[in-house]
Image (tube, rainbow, N blue to C red; front, side, top):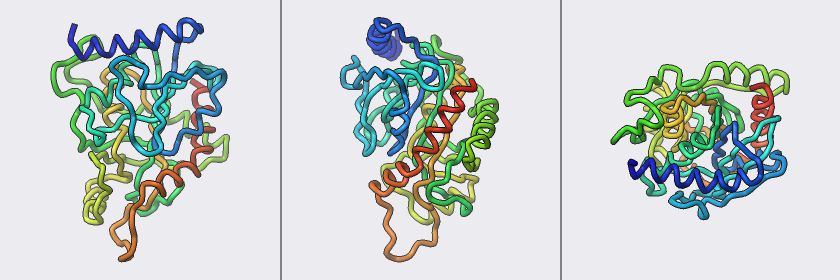
Length: 277
């Protein structure tokens, strides 16, 4: 077996053994971005598995990422939630950044929900806005470079509809029912860990990006490689424009605080969508 595939199946086996003893089979996977962990409090009868306990599993080091799998019931389905993701900028290779998604695939998930804190490059976006990602521009290394893992998907997966149209429609329906305002946009993914310069923000806007961040796209690519439908949402945590005052500074703690302020609305929305799947 390919060493990468062996690592995935070993990690999945460890998690499956714990869940099997409790009669849990995950249907929905979730990845929570910076400051967006509040949805965990809505999960009934949660089982916590720290990443550090899983054989061969990467450990999250980013601010606002606790580093646990949380498994339980949400919206009438069994969910497995990543309380903190793995980022390329932490120094992990892409096969490790995306390993958790493949582990969730082996465990049986049928849908994947992703969230992130992002800069709002679009002038119409403001701090606290919830933005449904409808497409992306990838400037991160593609996680499928290298030998193809045939057990998971084809060599050349289609990315025409990377973000599931049916799940987006459910999100709009749910948002309307909950009185939550949504925007839609294109997410531009860069490596980080530096925030972009004003000229880079301008470039991203001209290129067609509405949002910018340092995550999510690798997970989307690997999920779609495995034919898992994906829904992704950004919380705008800073207005990423190119006309800042001379004393403006982007700050990671401020990003987490802004995400936390919007997390309740996002959590309600995710739970409602899951109940409609």
